[in-house]
Length: 505
Image (tube, helix red, strand yellow):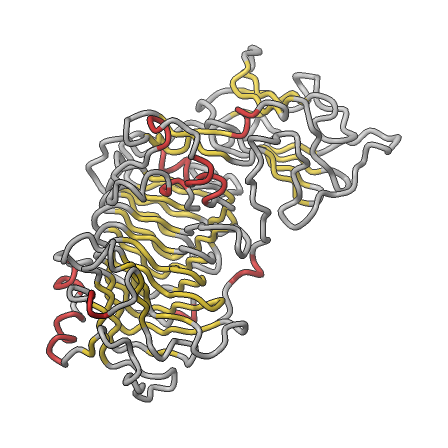
């Protein structure tokens, strides 16, 4: 099954956006478009939203559609004003602070607001999308002004009546169902807008439905917002994506940021988890979270650094019928989690975390030589248990080139990874598993690299005689117990829907 990469453009890593805020921001589909500065005619873009009669979402992006390709300038400001003239948000191309924003009320381990680096203006061909720092107030009239040269060759917007719109009322605060539609017909235009509407300290289930479309945003659900379920219109129809990664918002970016602002909350492993929680396209620190029927793609290009599509660091997280796309570290789970009927691709440690995790009826596709899994158990608790999964490969992956899992014995000696009733193509290493630090099975007394009933993709039993000597083939009785997610997790992740063929999502 080919991943849905043709649906989404690869976006360049924004590694230098703070240090060089005046760089030309390329189109998401490629290099910067030719400059229109030499044109003798003024550019007259169409604005959206641009209506007072019909109110729009408080989290609406601003969009300008030009008559031809457009290039972002290196200076100038775009301002959003209340009707009375008060400036409520400013995008200043020469100000490094413009390229940072708070998301989801995220707070560091010290309780201070954390700020992400992001791209406030995205140019794709003749369309420029502007992502404001904060949502607007409900039921208000706003107007937009733009300095000349903010877009190369554009005279800007100086007349306060030229670009006006008004926002709709918020839903009632006691609702338990919210809708998201990027075209404006839902309660919110972004997934984050709906998440933020759920009150901190939430104690009741809240369901968020997301309409078909591509949602270019970092999504974050803080630990203060449990009991949220987010459901798309199908993994082929609803896509959330962003080029977030370790260079933009992870260890490399946070090294010189004070710990009070940068240290991760709910750190399971205090030392290695200092900053790496901020680099996912979709991050969750909340308990009792559920994500179904959509795609999450980290748009970071190949070899662009560690870049989770989804990171879950809460208790009782469920993922069902989702597609998770990236390269290195695609799916990270650090609390009890259940994954079913899903598709995940990547190349290096693209399912990883600390356990316990139960995954069933899913496809894991290796895009290059590397490692399917790395688990980091800190005790003898459950690790990563895979039941009835298919391990497939992309066209560039040779035989005998991908490990089932790897671990550093001196750091995580009691780690557990189990594959039961799983089908594997011949790209899976004959030795199966890798241990390092030391590379010596005599030091692996607590390690739990286990396997049972492995077959090839045609269903024929695999010859596992060449497996790592400190791995083990389970008995039928042992495998039977581990097929039960409630036994593995100590929690019954009831799933209402029937099992589906992952090739259909």
